[in-house]
Length: 239
Image 1 (cartoon, rainbow, N blue to C red):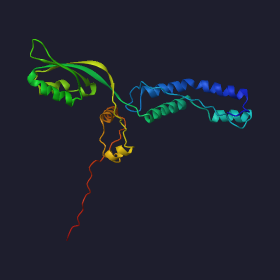
Image 2: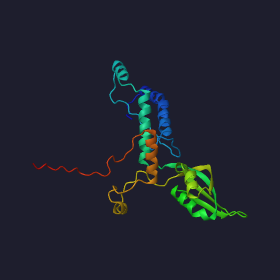
Image 3: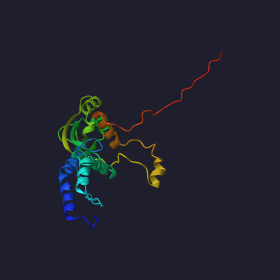
């Protein structure tokens, strides 16, 4: 800040900054209420806001300053939009992770359908916690975590694979972070040697979930429109 800045100019600048404080907070709330991945609320992060006040070096008279303030006034909506976009861009630069809800699932099945039940659990990305035989009953009791996104059709698949012999009880348990980077791009020498330029890298689970949510909400999705294209052959007619 220039040393020749008067106290009146400083107080005016600070008053203007204080008047925009509510707009900055509103922009922060808009950004955290709808994150850049799926337009879902964000949590477990912090933003560091650094204020920088740069007054004009040249002193203007009262008429010119009033005219400039009327012509270039800062609207609260502009500040809110700028803060929201800045927060969303900052989140994308720090490699955000997706969290998904998990069900605690308790299953009971006869021994002859135990393999079929595990096939359904593997298909639904379930995490098996415990397996034990119930005393006095010819039933196996299995406890597992099942993602909520994979629970649609779970009971029907389980009933079809086990001929209706297995039963399941689902209770919402917790939120679990996916360790996969949805925007993974090979950068190191080892990654480039393994995956090449990245064109052959298949979308991971986190990216598939993000794309599914964005399609359901009508948000734009980065995907190839044409995956397998063939050149059309035209043959000249022989007269």
